[in-house]
Image 1 (tube, rainbow, N blue to C red):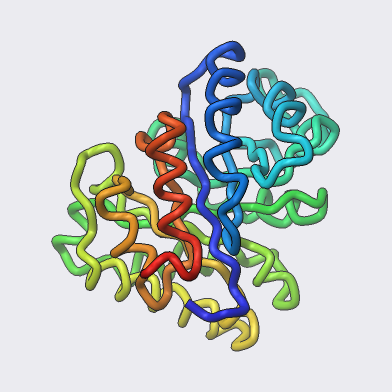
Image 2 (image 1 turned 180 degrees about the horizontal axis):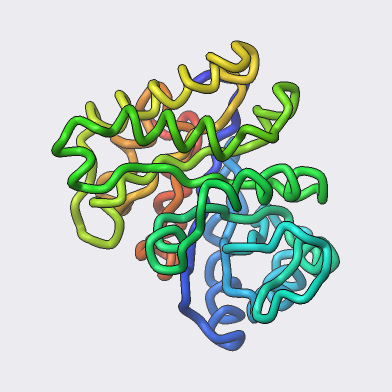
Length: 258
């Protein structure tokens, strides 16, 4: 990983934790990560936990991200939460295009092409998720899928702001399955993503952070986070326990023997 790219370890809680459970979690997490230097830490929490987590994490090294947003500042969109509402609550970033949003709720590349620049304009740090299914991997279709997602989802982001988007590579076949991409598979895919950004702008390619997501655990974090083009992790199930998540954060820090 280039010295200029500060690693980010983000925990995606998905649809877990009431506000009381979230408060218990953050109080257990903060002392475990307060002294870890050289790595940024974020928790991506349900909408109902956002304000409580922003308040509880204030002044700490832990940032709070939402898991989705609507690109419009307001409007007749029942059940949606706007980018303006997230900014008002004080969140620092937002996960966009997670494979579960795409597969379960019909999130399209056309929608993401609007959401990513809207997040940037609102001052939120977007984590854009991309990745291939198991059948696409088996049919040697990974490169085509990644090329299409990177091209379409970032089409409205100007070159000078590309590096502000964090890209999370999540092989869909490894999410919640216990399967993990081999170090070789992860490095190959993430180097390809960096090259795709480089096709737009070489300087952005050097600066953009690319995270690995897909069954990251304390046991495999050091190997994955030590790869040349890996700048951190988007952690699912293992982020629900503050102890295991803190271990992954520690593995992502420079000078941790990686």
